[in-house]
Length: 237
Image (cartoon, rainbow, N blue to C red; front, side, top):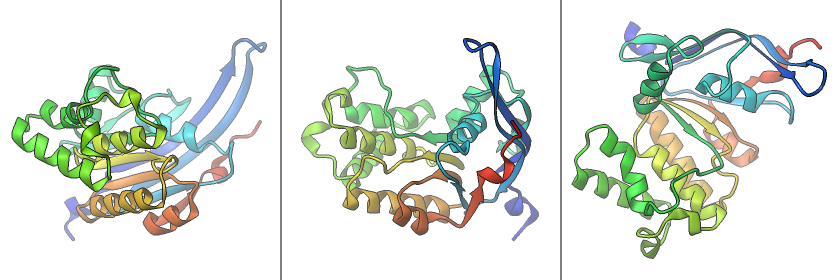
């Protein structure tokens, strides 16, 4: 393995997060502090801990939805590390467009966009031709067992499990180098959970680095390369 291949794709150093409750006399709620991690290509780091340990807050801090109280989140992007905590909004958007993907339990889309178009969009935005984008979208939607009759319909009309499959297809079609997975199988049945496990393993096989939250024990056991106990970094009250 070369030095370049051995570089972590994401490095978190001394990360801290507290919340200030402005409607409760400025009460300060500590979440975590001095949190450190590094994730190599081909690793799936699963966040472990009970509800309230700070797993989702950590995930959102890494993605840039939450501004940490301190520390850094460095993502390897175009050969250099970009610190998500200090990068400009345009830099963060560029990292998200090509390097850092996020799969949540929820699909937020413009209501009238057809499903196939929605899944194709990430590839079209990155310069992939329409025919190739369509073929790859159709392959993923078929693998995720979404009926063809749904492809021309907007996913806002679908069930929760169907929307989740569209969400997964849209996220995995781009083949991000780094992916954050926040309960991606929460609304899925056993067969579709198995498909998502296969997609995760394929991504790890091509060298993606992943950080995930999985409450499903079987899914977690199937994809985790190691566990990360978030509660070990709990901030003092």
